[in-house]
Image (cartoon, rainbow, N blue to C red; front, side):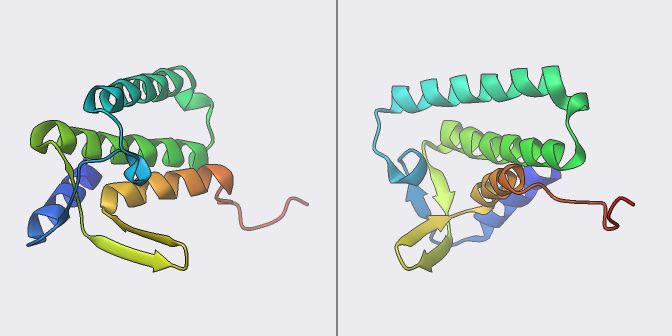
Length: 125
């Protein structure tokens, strides 16, 4: 809940945010298609977490919680405002875009799923 508050608070401080009316990666879709995708994706995440949360290790739990929090914050904002406020401009060669903290949560979650955090520093002997 704190992460959602932090995302929304950071967006409220920005004077001129970029108003993102499009789907992820600026893909232009009809609004109803976006909401169907959101509904299906969020339902799948919730179903997976309810079924598997206590079977997951720490890094997997963290990753899925970050993805869920980021998605929830952006979806609620899109429902309330009709768009998502982006304000963090990032440019790496071909990878250019404008993002927000919720996007960062989602990206961090995906990275953690791809490269799990090892919280055991000592190798097994």
